Length: 410
Image (tube, rainbow, N blue to C red; front, top):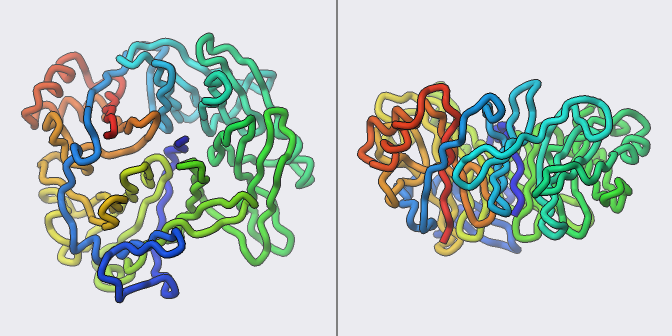
């Protein structure tokens, strides 16, 4: 599964009456491969979830700190061939920094400019596992592919053919791109739509390594989608999400959208919370929305609304809560996840080494990744009894790079 990416997507979830099966006893119903989650039942089933239920190992990776390896906001993590590739998104310094599995700095991929092999904007990254593990970076108007061992540029693929089709300069939403295998890339781009004032309209395309169009699907006037979106590849399916929508989609072979997951009965809590706060689903593929063989999670932001939601999901003294809506593929049930630790961090309860809770942000090679700023890591180590945290915290200062938390799935 390829994961993309770490730009924030907030989905204000609305009830779709035609898909609401309130008479079902289970809180998730699978009808024609469509997952329907009953949010009301998930809230009533709120509980702690031990990390060991899904994971067999956990380790901390302090990333080497130097002038060449300073990391800002982490947008993506890929783990391949004993190297960790981290894409960062500091404005004006979008790059990929390469580390060893133990966090030692190797190299930085960052060629800014408008010439050959250079980019102005870096929107995404993928590993071509069936093509000598090339590392391909998605820029606004080109794809740049590097040899994974030498980190040398071996291929540059222009996206000019799409721009010519729509008859103007194209802003490719390359962060919504992924490698499909067999030398094919899927991506989403913005294009004007005849008869509509909307300019941020999702159209889909598949190209080959030369930039030739294999398949293209313009947005239709009666069926189009706007706003921020994300895309990921899971189990040979392309999964797509859109802002202000309760539905997660699967993209068909004909580049059409078909529902993959719908979350219902959120309006029950919105109505109860009038004048008391708000609730939103935060789905960010690879992070805020996550899917693997064992489970699927969606991040949930709750602003205020104490007395509407169970007190146990709020941290001590906190007015707001950020938690996880989890669907277990074995039990076919959904729950709202909380933890009892006093620190302000949400996620699975860490019963492996009894460190801080674990929040799944990225997936690569049967491993999950979270990251923690050095300052927060030091604070957690002081408040918790985990000796592994304390040993690593002793090597850090507040200016150090973040610490990765790597979990291996069962």
